[in-house]
Image 1 (cartoon, rainbow, N blue to C red):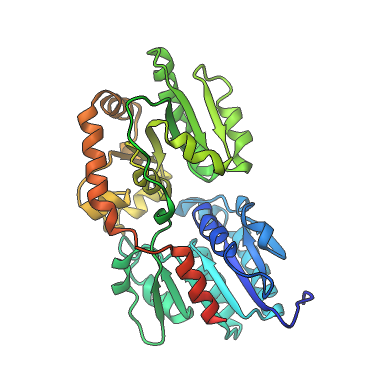
Image 2: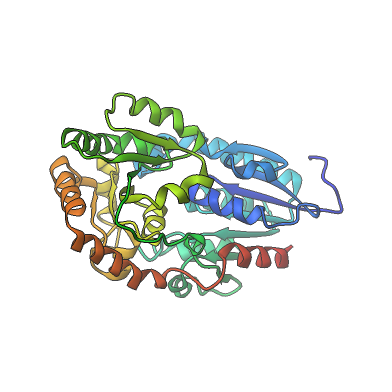
Length: 373
């Protein structure tokens, strides 16, 4: 057991992906660590608040069903190690953030080993899109779930299980001021190396289009510190001026000058929408993963705002539909058609109020966490 201060409460946090890391950082930065000790799994931002860090998010690279199966032995070892650390140290509270499959299996392993302390999950599995039975399974193992969306409440109503609506982190994102002149096209290729590798040929395609048509755009790629070198290598032959940045404090300044964005599907597409930047959403799963999911996924779209709107208000080209011709045609339409861009922003502003709350999700989370310890 680590040398805990008995006057402090001890929390274990498990955060294995970037969307969760942003939540992790903002919650930990609001906690008074004079009275709380934190151990666990997180990214580079959050590690300054962590006493004992066991893994970094960069070690969790798999995305689809097939990729996870291929990495299964690695994740089983990680779960076993983390389970032993938690049982040995008997933390006062376990906080799991996002990554529902990894976290569920860790928590199941803990409960099978008679762990009785409180465990909460921040960010619900997308039971409204597929595998609805996960809601009941989570309720049987966890004490509470923190929900980003108010419409999720109805899926998590079970005896002896609590749900707290905290709202989505886009609450904190500024809507940029519209203007006539912009400098950048932003590329958001994903927060995992796996995603970047699958999607990069499409970003490469857009760069070549910009260069060959002598378009005077600068490409802006916001990313994470551990991905900068990878992206620099992949863009080394580009002729278009490209800015690759992991300086989060400067992102707002860059985004204020972004004309349109090519965005990897996920949290990033919602953040770009909140900023009022027109975008194209792209994604590519392993072919066999896509085939399997066709039998289970209940929603028509990949982008959340499209799902809520029940129509494609943001153009998305994903999986088997993602090809060079469709992407170039959609890109040409968006950069050349002001009406199309304005309609997208108008539709976003009519829809986005359904996914954000009136209060900071981080403040709501901290208040609730303190009440649980």
